[in-house]
Structure formats: structure tokens, C-alpha cells
Image (cartoon, rainbow, N blue to C red; front, side):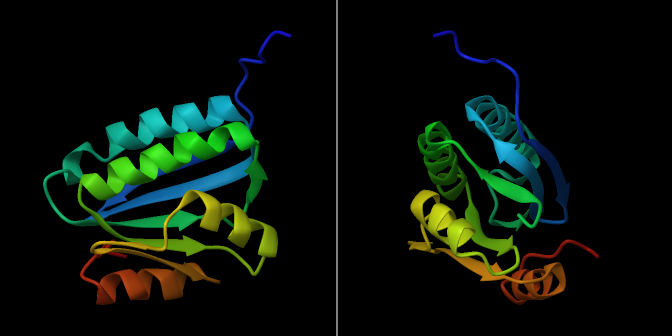
Length: 136
């Protein structure tokens, strides 16, 4: 069976202040996860060597295939190893998203911590309290 090489799922990445912002959309396949991995590592370059935060907008994300799990796990570890201290995940209550994200992203590891918020304002406020400002 030939692997489908077309990306399913979308993302937008930006850096504001000392926060990397990611907005994920749609249902992801392995190609989307690999492209996200590559783009996030590139986008994070100005933050490396410092402590930084991560705001992840997941409201429009529709989960993904099992093949994306090890890619995201490796990316999370790379981020933590390269200064990520706080990740704020934003999405409405969803047990499926929670279980999927809990499977891929550690809640605490060393100085790193991840929290879920139901709206972007709460997430941004929490990141600011931790010392990670988006300038918004």
C-alpha cells in the first residue's frame, strides 16, 4: 500500500515576545505532524538559549492518526531540552483531546509544566504570570 504524501491538517506558527504561538486546525496525518515538527524547530530558533513559553490553540484541531504520536513526543522533548518552561493548551472541554494530549505531552518534567485553558485570555494571563509575555 502506497503512503499518502498529502498533508491533512493545518498549522500556523509565530513568535511574540518570548512565546511561541501555534494554532492547529483539522485532523492531522503523519505528514502534517512531520511538517509541524520541522517548522516549529525553525520558528523556535530565536528563542533557543533562553526560557520560553508556548501557547497552543487547539480549538479547531480534530485530533490525528496514531503515527503522529511519536513525532509529537519527540518534538515536545526537544522543546523542553531547548528552554520550553510552560505550555498553555487552549480548547473547550473535550475528553478525547485531553486524553490524546495527555498521551503525547507530559504534564510536568523538571521545570516544565503544561496546563489546559478554555480560552486564550486565561492562557495568556497564566503564561504572563510565569514570565512569558506575548506583548498582546
